[in-house]
View 1 (tube, rainbow, N blue to C red):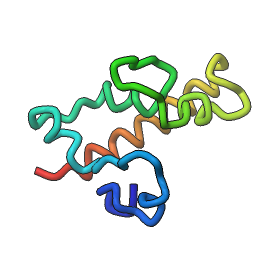
View 2: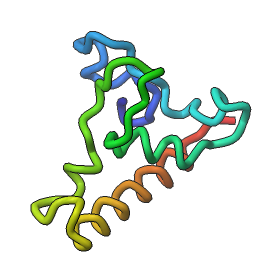
View 3: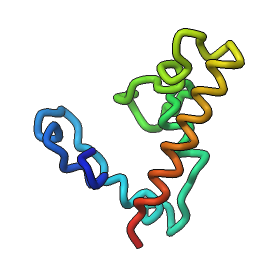
View 4: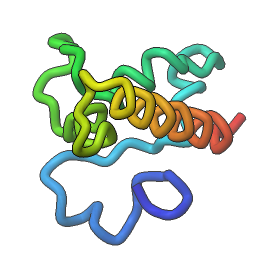
Length: 95
């Protein structure tokens, strides 16, 4: 992603896929930031077959920690981290 979210970080050239510019999510969705869509994409536990192979890890499971997503503590931890990531991505949108 890179420090500015533009997809031009130091690891981008080493990846086999193009890294998206995360500052243009709202622009790609007619000027509206699709918070729930973004949250589900980061979470990764929900299939999005139209988008091809899942290159991102299933962060919803990783964020839940050792308690796991079925435990209320793990679920709350994952939800909190997902919400903070979505808020950050909303904050870096370019107009």
